[in-house]
Length: 148
Image 1 (cartoon, helix red, strand yellow):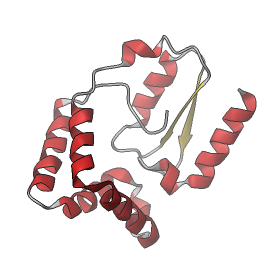
Image 2 (spheres, rainbow, N blue to C red):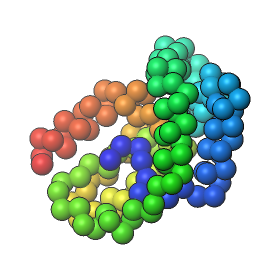
Image 3 (cartoon, rainbow, N blue to C red):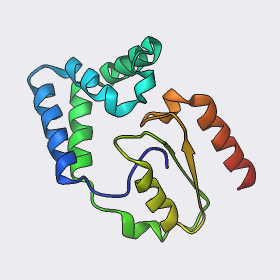
């Protein structure tokens, strides 16, 4: 489980999503990603043009329609915390220390609820850990796979 949450959206999160949906529906889809970048990546990486261009290209490739479907699906996601205790397989729970969308405490909550979970926190990293800190994420996954 990488940079995620088992909780349903809060009212604040849903309202932020509705604002992004309104922007996208007004034809300002390209304006969505620049607004989200500070929530997606560590502040030190905002000036990393290679990373930010890659993220914006990925968002453009997903497209407006898929973005809208994703936002509506997430807003309708039920709270899944009660289901975590039923997980009976080794589980890696990994996140960036500065993940603004799914903070470390949410990952701690998930790891504590899964009997065989291992929590890994990547330092100086936001929500897009696999893009921001690929080497660290890969190393953590390799260590986890080697011991499970």
